[in-house]
Image (cartoon, rainbow, N blue to C red; front, side, top):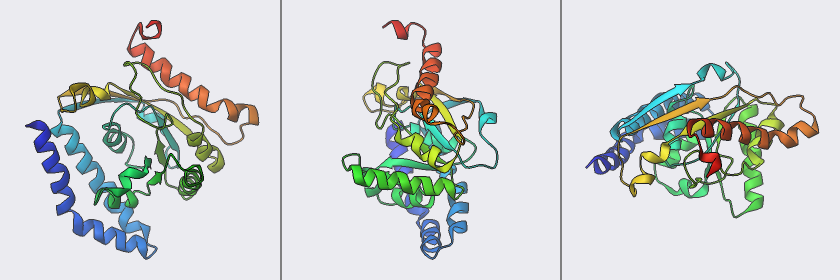
Length: 248
């Protein structure tokens, strides 16, 4: 029943908010981002926050003070669950653009709100298009919009406490824009749905925001080492929360 109510709310909210979305997209098309920015800042967390509540998700967040104030940055998070998206949109300092797979751009209404957020849609099978999207995301950061990305490229399905390889694209967005990288560690988000055969059950999720890493002025060696550095930081926090996982 919880899962059914969740989906009713998911689509019902989007349908009822269509006039607001249309207003924002129309203004955005005419070159005015302020209307869409204000609408997304108010209604996206409202929608996603209710989705989390309906699923029975409780969240503990630590480290919000590590988010650079008044500066665009690149949030880099491990990826375990579909629920990582509403978590990223509600548990940081504000909802920010996400780098998402192209399939999400096919979802009616969802794609509209994501466009108001300045999200970028990547075709992982098309290297040229992927590069173009990274350039687009970099431009967003240069224009003052923070971006969130999952550098593993897909949901990591290994044991809780493990992480996949962090690919370099996310970090090129930050380094080309001269923006700080903010590592985000998501704990136990698979407990909400994926670990239950696709059914939603109450779960507690922890979100750790680690200290920002400045990229401006880094030399070539440091830039090359950045993805591994952040991956190691995230892995260390996951292993600390799951003692013994490194020995499995």
